Length: 218
Image 1 (cartoon, rainbow, N blue to C red):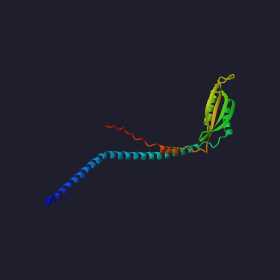
Image 2: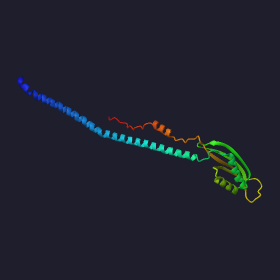
Image 3: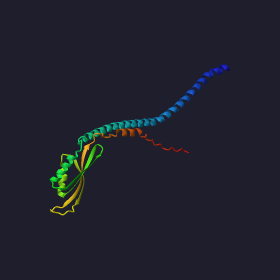
Image 4: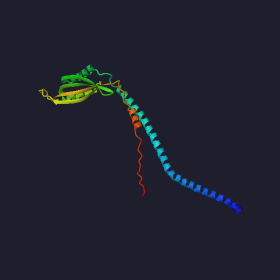
């Protein structure tokens, strides 16, 4: 009897081994299907990450290009500012304005220099000019001041009808004019703003990902 049973033991061992192998295969297949279902999701994430990486690289290149352009513009501004006079000479400016006005026979001339104002890369100084003349005389005056070799600008004009007795056929007016002179500021360096750009970039919070609320199925 025992001998007969022993003759069939090997069959039981093979059957048990086959069942274990089948169980392991089923488990492997289940895991494989689970992994395969995740491949599209992982692939999309990889592609999204690669796209974001390219965008960041492009953004960084844009920043470097912008910094180079800013530097070029700033240097151009600094080059232009040096073309302004290095000083404001009151005696010469006042003498020129008075000479032009007297050459046009403008009367009651009064000139008063103001104080220098710092405008950043340049300084301005205003001269108050008041006088009496005709509209035509003042038009020619403004034109001559603008065409002079000195860098002078007519800032404001206030013209009122003169109350004095008319001797000629042209209406006399009283004019109050502000003339500006300029000089460059040797201590000024044009602000590039690059440090601010880099600081804002470094402190910029990471974009928040949209998370959809998942509803639990009842």
